[in-house]
Amino acid sequence: MKKEVMNALVITVMLVGGAAVTKNQIMKNFEKKELQVQTLSEAVNAAAEGNWGLSFQEEGKTPVGNATREYLQQYDAWFYGTEQDVKDRCIYLTFDAGYENGYTPGILDVLKDEKVPAAFFLVGNYMEENPDLVKRMEAEGHLVGNHTMHHPDMSAIASKEDFKKELEQLEAVYRTVTGSEMKKYYRPPQGKYSEENLKQADELGYTTVFWSLAYVDWYENKQPAREEALNLLNRRIHPGAIVLLHSTSKTNAEILQELIQGWKQKGYVFRSLEELK
Image (cartoon, rainbow, N blue to C red):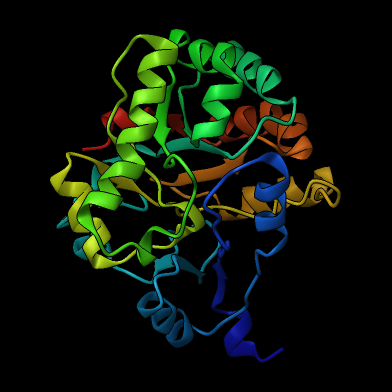
C-alpha cells in the first residue's frame, strides 16, 4: 500500500437501504457495507456521492471529514464537537441500532455504573419491538435519536414531504411508546446525505449528527477481537469526538466498561448531545 494512502486512511461507511426493515434485511444491508481505503482527494469526491467519509491523518487528532465543520454548521450538522469541547476534552458517545441483538441491557448497565450519557439512534422496527428498552433509555437520561422509520437512503429522497414523513413517522412511534416527544437529533441512515437533506432537517428543527470515530463492528458473525477493538478505538479517540458504536456488537458490549474507564483516565469527559451547541 502506498505511503500516502497509509497516511490518509479513510473510512467511508456505505449501506444499501431498504424500504421495509426487519432484522434479516438490516443484516443484509450490514453485509453490503464496504471498508474503503482512500486518499484524501478520493474522500472529497465521495462527498459528492453523498457518503460520509473520514481521513484519519494523525493519531489522537480530529480526522478530516469530507465536509468541513463550517459547511455543516450552516445546517446545524456536526461530526465533532465545538472548540470548547476540544479544549475541555469532551466526547459524545452514540450508538446506532437497526435491531436488538441482546446486548443493549448490558450496555445500559455499564452506562449507568459509569454515569455516562449516550445517544441511541433507532429505527422504527426497533422501537416497535423493544418498547421496554426504549423507555429505559429515556428513563435513565439517554437521548433517543431519529434514525428514520424505515432506514432508507435519504439522499435519494427528493421530496421534502417524503423526507419529513420518514422522521415524523418515527416521532409518532416514539410518542406511542414513551408518551414523550422525541428530541430532534437525526443521524442519516448509511451515513448518506445531500445538501438538500441537511437543509430539510434543519428546517424541521433537527440537528444532524454524523461522527468522527467509528470502526468495523457491525458483522454479527465476524466480530473484532477485544484487543483489536480497544487498540483501534484508543488510537483514534480525540477531544471533541462524536463516537459511533453499534449496540448489536458483542465486542462493544464486552469492552465498553474498559473503554469508558480508559478514556476517563486519559482525561476525557462525557457529555450528552443535548449539550452540543
